[in-house]
Image (cartoon, rainbow, N blue to C red; front, top):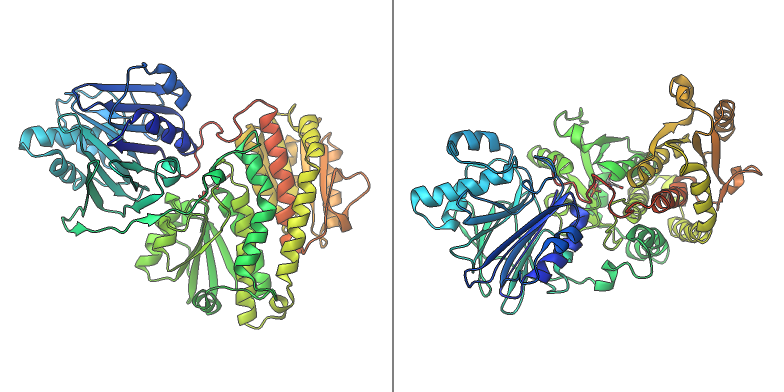
Length: 603
Ligand code: AGP
């Protein structure tokens, strides 16, 4: 996934560059900008790497009253200058930025572009070359040509196109990849994410799949690819710009880790009344309560949140729950029960792998619920129901507060459905109180972050690999803890069911291999201590993170006591901080790890 931004009707350079900087979380392999001053001068600058490289490459006199920009997470073609966007046609008339994947680009290339000299190996260039061919051969206007080209396209796209013979227009199109219009006075903006241009406007229009537009500084025309006109409604985005600034923190990741106690408190206010009874849409509770099986679909950290959700739903609502990688289920659908309900967990609400499953659920008329941090996202809009994570914008690529928010909302749901089904476990679960304890517990962990940093420096920094081990609810947590550490510090880390190690993987344990043991499960705590001895006997450096009622004297981190099913809310914070400090103290860009992007809107 990539980030695109465009502006028409005011000085474009700074707005595009700032927009791209705010969109870097969507990918940062390469970047580019096209500017046109409407006086016959155009400027195109492209670079590999970050936006700062792009700024350094631009000449002082480059400016324009219309501009488009792109920051790329490479899908087709390596991160090179030629593959950076904007891509242009062979007569250098049309310039295009694109987020998404043109699945049938080879077919289009063979069918329409014989003899056309290509300068990149991107799918996007095929599209801009095709638009140019249609304009030249059919003598039609660029908007008509764009629609004709898109009629041939299979795939996902968010597009901004400029014709340098009509530079006072931005032509846009949207299918499966997010695209917003920002409305200004005497100018208009187009962006992958409204946060990227929040300093310019708070009034937005979300384009829908299959829509195309012709935008000038004073006029917005939107229609369906099928030709019917669309009259979209704009909305005011209510986000305080300070929510998207780092404040006193070195990185967004630490800021967002530290926001978690207040996220839990906000969710408590939102979803529980003063007596601790859930305040959930009755329709949602009823739909889930009639299910004979719940299916949770997600990716990455959200998948790990789903694994904890399974334990919550099965314990408090007593409904069998399956958790699947969305990317697998999309093409190898699970065997379904008689009365399934699908739950999608997604911070961004735009994960393409999850959208594939939702589309199939819609076709099969399976009720669906999305839990997401972006209320107007695709997964929220297309599912039968949606619930907000209310975690505030999560900018760091590594997801932290969205994960704990997902656990909290799953706990609320499990309690609500369990109470509707009159299960004692749900009724007796004092979730309001337990979430308050968890918020306090997180604050205690954060206040001990210097000790956690010391553990990271002593045991993790010198090592090329590491293990997290746990049993019971600590196993899904071990998976999430491992993802956090490896994705931001590049230390190869595996999360393991502790007893499984001895069935093969223990062969990897060498002198000083860091093994982080999670000890929150009372049923298996003694057995886990045995697993710890097994790795100690082979030279491992063991770091023990234990609930206080299960702790031993020499354990490294002691966790405050909270309901067993909420222990991940606290122990994950230790893992998040270990990952943060391992990355920071290796001198890495904690918020933007290599090869990654925040919202994976390609399959
Ligand atoms: C989390 O740290 C990762 N950045 C990644 O695994 C993420 O959780 C995954 O891509 C799913 O994203 P989503 O929650 O927006 O669907």
